[in-house]
Each structure stands twice: as C-alpha cells, then as structure tokens.
Image (cartoon, rainbow, N blue to C red; front, side, top):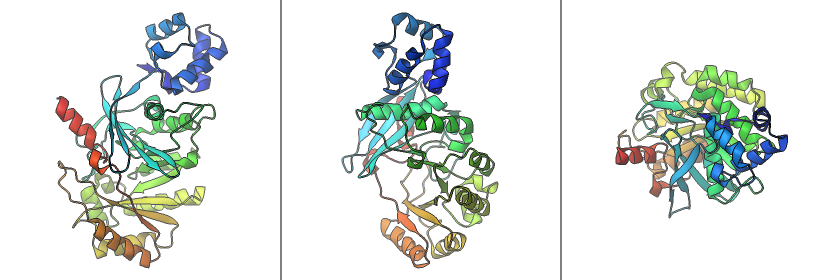
Length: 348
C-alpha cells in the first residue's frame, strides 16, 4: 500500500512532477486529501491523473469512520476507524470550552500489555503509518464539518491504542505532518504524547526538538507495584521514568504530566501516595489521577471517585500539583481499546 497522506506537500510535489503534472496539481491534491476526500470526490483533479495514481497503487483515503457513538452525557464521540487492510482502530473526540480534542491511536493493538488496558488484549497487530495516524485527524475533522480553511480539531492527544514511541518513525513524521503550516497546522503546544516509558526511544525523541506536551504513564510509584501492572517497568523502572521526565523539563522548560490510574487495592493506598510524593515533590509537574474504566477481560476495579479525591488531597497537602481527570464518554465505552474489542468480537 502507498498512502498519499504519508507524503508531505513537498513530497507530493515530487510525486506529481514525476507524472509530468504541474506543481499546482500537488496543492490541489493536498487540499483534497486534507478535506478527507477519496478519488471519486476530487473534482479538481483530472480523471487520467487519478487513474494513473490508482493504477500505481496510491491510496487517497486510507482511514474511514465506519461507526461513531455520541455520548448522551457530555457529547463525546467515539469513532471506529477502518484501515485499508480491514484493521480497526479507535479515536475519541472530546469537546471542551477551549476547543475540540481528539485522542488518536498509533498502533493496531499494543505490545505493552498493561494490566488495566483493553488495547493490549490481542497484542500488537501492526504499526500505523504516519498517514494513517494523520487520517484519523482528517476524518474526525471532516466529521465535525471542518477542512483546511476551517479546522475543527484544535488539540490532539496520542493516548489511544498503542505506544507512540514503539512506532517511533511514523509517530515523528505524523507530528511534522499535522503541524505543517499549509496542512492542519495544529500547534505542537496543542499536542500531547503519552508514553509508558520507553526510555531509549524517548531520549532519541528529545533530540527531535518537537515541543509537544509529554505525558508519562506512571500508574505506580513503587517498582514492586508498577511491575505487576506494567511489564515495561521490568526494563524501565520508576526511577528511569522520573529521570526522563526531568530531562524533558530541563531541555524544554515545559511541565510534564504523570498519568496515574487508580486501581482499588493495588496503587491507591496511603503508602502509594507517600511514595508518589517522595518521587515528584519539588519537580514542576502535574499528576493526573484517573478513575479507571472497568475492562471485563482485565478484572481490575477502579478506585471510587470519592477515594480518588482522598488520594488527591494527600498529594495537594504535600505541595504536589494534581488533577482528577473528568470522566468522559463512560456510556460509550470511552476507554482505550474497549469498543474495538467489542466490535471485533461481534464480527468474528
């Protein structure tokens, strides 16, 4: 498969030139692609040129929304995207006063196999290409009535299925594509990337000098606990994750976020709070506490919201900046991987 959205504008210009087409043809093609149009909808592109591209295996629209579910509670929209090979990934559109945030996936499945997450139930199927990751944003933007002249997606979070830094090259190219001035032009400062702590890849990413917001999936501050819920901790322990976060701050001067999903009886006790305080107190960061969505196949129970605020209070009293994440899309199975797993099971 050769996906046109994998190409930057300059790469599209090179491609169209190789077909003997004028340079403006690339810009016409670019506009159509970023409006989410397939070949049949591209009225500004000559039929002969489109047929040549198709004959050579170039796919225009590699991602399409096949199902969408709108929350009756808060208007959150859960998307099921289908890729050209029939694989399914998820996205979530969340509406806030400051704009629309889209949570996107970077892999089909995930190899990290965190004990509380539905994304890794089937392991890693494959990586998404940069153009497929971008295609999730384009499709959601079109769903909401947007195009390049009026963008509806203002913020992007790479927190859906998959570990972004486990799909390093495609993730980095996606970030450059989605930030491109003549493209969707989403500011790096409006993009967050969540990693469970693949430190070698993270240090490589630091050298890219892409000033996004970094979010570290910590979920426990004691190695003996984190290793039981996150296998990656056996290689990259808590100390290494905290040190990486500090390197990011030192280089960018941007405050990092530590995600912490509260699991009843696992990581929500007083000693867990004290361990977390000892790790991050005095470091300019935010701890984002998450009330865990129940995943039947995992069997772990989330801490109640009341207990989440109790845990939050312990951190606040110690001077640690903390938030309790607002639960969104609960009635449409908003947690990563839940809806995809249900869809696949239903269609087996």
